Image (cartoon, rainbow, N blue to C red; front, side):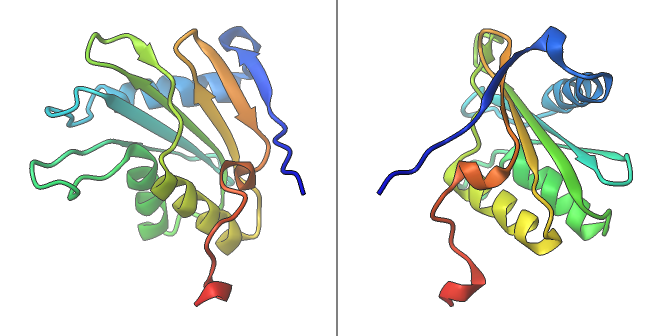
Amino acid sequence: MEITLTYKKLDKDDLSEEDQQLLTAAESARQNAYAPYSNFTVGCALQMENGQVVTGNNQENAAYPSGLCAERVALFHAGAENMGPVRTLLVLAKNAEDALASAFPCGGCRQVILEYAMKQDIPIRVLMLLENEQLIELEDAKSLLPFAFSANAL
């Protein structure tokens, strides 16, 4: 058996105006991250089906693992406010030297993203900014976690 992952690599200049706005929103959110321990700041922006943009950033806590990743902050906020389906999720990060770092969602975030996609029954497109200012685009978040845990396993 084999699992194949299909993705696109994009330059920032190739982004649509809507995606450029998401990138700007994620960078703005990242600047408000609370990351005094790792100095790894992450911003996330969601493009909702209704056109709204929802953001989140990582929130660390001295009592590990009480913090929360940017992707989950954004998704949980959108869910708590019943903002409707998520079309696109964009994530970016900077390291302690304030340089771009590749921003790949952690396993917990991948699971949450997939559960939101299953709940809304609409694929979530994922954009991840890399340290070289290119982006990876996945048309469906399912590519992030091919063996996702679901309610069927309960």
